[in-house]
Image 1 (cartoon, rainbow, N blue to C red):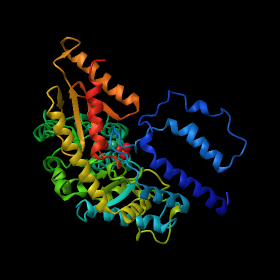
Image 2: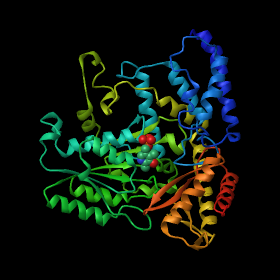
Image 3: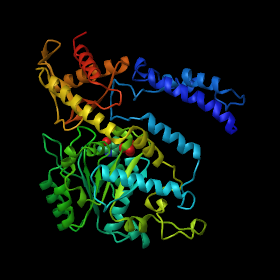
Image 4: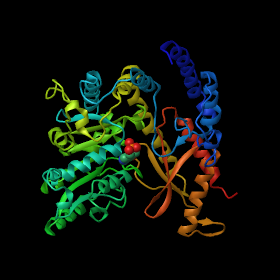
Length: 477
Ligand SMILES: *Cc1c(COP(=O)(O)O)cnc(C)c1O
């Protein structure tokens, strides 16, 4: 494709994207396809005939889009918001269009330095001190993986440079809670800690936040038993209920054992743009690294995940590779992001944040975040005021966990199993219809439903409509 052909086709693609976005509300939220249905729209063998952009866009519309769950839909209340602001989409297109290669500073000085600049802007916008240095990773899961590798190496004085983890005799322990995201256990497992050494610390029965005394006791008991308390992962906004582990107390306790602290603020980091919510991560300055996702609530399209580290020298000592073909005269004066994690090649992700901040501006993001919190609070209040409904966890930000628990189901008092079946039935009825989408989730061994408010297009009237759908879905059919 020549640049002139690209220009013509590109205009059509942009028009198609704009049309798709402006009509999203007329589509079902959940993709209405069966497993295998999208695949069956395609030939088994690779195509040999060429088509024009018009035909390709028709194929996109007819064969692919029906299989896309519309997370940009204002009635999407599932998982967490995965906002993809159109300004950041333009940044993504610019990044792709430039086609640069980030494998060293020299391979694209701008890629490296703009990433440093936007990470520093974002650091200031969430009120972190200048002791932190940032990078853009693909996801918070990858950042947690890096954190666990650094924690392991710090606890062993860089055993990778000797005989590796296989030579470590005292078990290294990682502490988190059952409410932590699944990526935490995955990272700890992949970093070699092992299931037996992932310690699940008790949480407060009301707030679901880590109990600091329980952490202190567990770490001390392990130390007394000749084990190494290596790392704590504190969740600032858990995935289930958006619970906030007490970071300040956690870092103090961890310091007694020189344990590494990673703060996973993947979703709730966006709220730290608002000074009035920063108390929710009080003490964060005492942690070793922090990750949060502009690609969730803030709305800088995937994959835009911020990773901040205090001791970059340590990180670089663990991650650096310096083969001769990557050496350059600038070494020592510049940041080499390949030494911050696992991948070598790097996309120009910073452009997504640059475009988002320059074209939409942070004030519009903050206004939207405040709107979403107000909508969630409104929803919490109406649910709590209905006798047969319950709000299952504190609503600090934008996720409201609810359960419908009528005193009787089918004419007799409901058992836990019947209530579970009832919950799954009403939520699946709504989800399947395509009218709205929510995530059922297990809390205290019982099903509940997470209503996660925060899609860019979601206004109060959408939340009101959802409440109407929920109230009719629980009626006996
Ligand atoms: C979403 C989420 C993650 C995972 O984020 P990815 O960027 O998709 O890896 C991790 N932790 C928490 C608390 C999350 O909400």
